[in-house]
Amino acid sequence: MMDGKTILIIGSGGHAKVLIDALRCKGASVAGILDRDPLLAGSSLMGVPVLGDDSQLARYRRQEVVLVNGVGSIRVSDQRRKVYERFKEQGFCFGSVLHPSAVVAADVVLEEGVQVMAGAVIQTGCRIGANCIINTRACVDHDCTIGAHVHVAPGVTLSGGVTAGASAHIGTGACIIQLVAVGDHALVAAGAVVVSDVPAHAVVRGVPARRSP
Picture 1 (cartoon, rainbow, N blue to C red):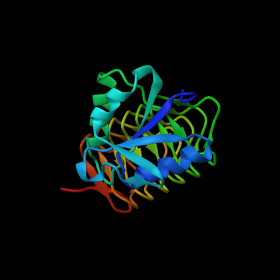
Picture 2 (cartoon, rainbow, N blue to C red):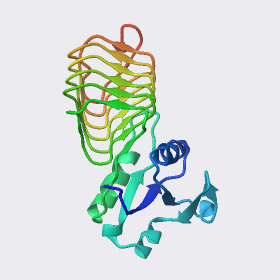
Picture 3 (cartoon, one colour):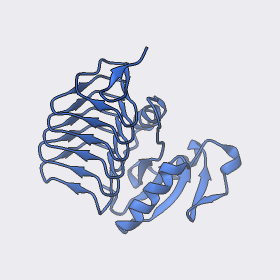
Picture 4 (cartoon, rainbow, N blue to C red):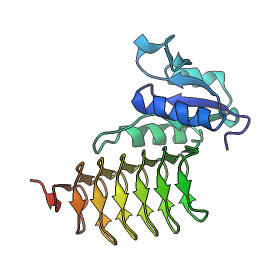
């Protein structure tokens, strides 16, 4: 999808740095970064110029550009989803990023804009929704279904048959046992061990994980 196209990253934070490195590991070159902070225009990140805000896209034809969503998250947040939806409505496409050290089974379905970071493993039978992050050394075992805009944070373990609803956030180092369902917009706190279903919009934490007030 990125072959021969101009790659632009949205956002200039820490997650954008990881994406730049992953793309370079695959031999891709990032042409620039878009960021709404006017103080960043003209600066650079890892040698990649910050071009300015969204208006800079007027310099390109849509069919010549592929976007990469550089907005990360540390909790349930709509910011990353909104970035994705805003540019999709304008007719732009998002490229997926797969670090070369990631292991992804041949039959895994990765929807548009998925990012699979260094050392992550996605086993057979999984489907990963649009605009998801499967972060560093996360393990997604067989037959998991991950909804759109989900962040599976570094070091997470999802056992077989886990379902995560849209915009859920599964925090660093959390473990979810087999066949558990995590609802839309739910938050699984870092280090939690989840042994039962998590309702939509709920927050769970602890070992075993329990719902927070």
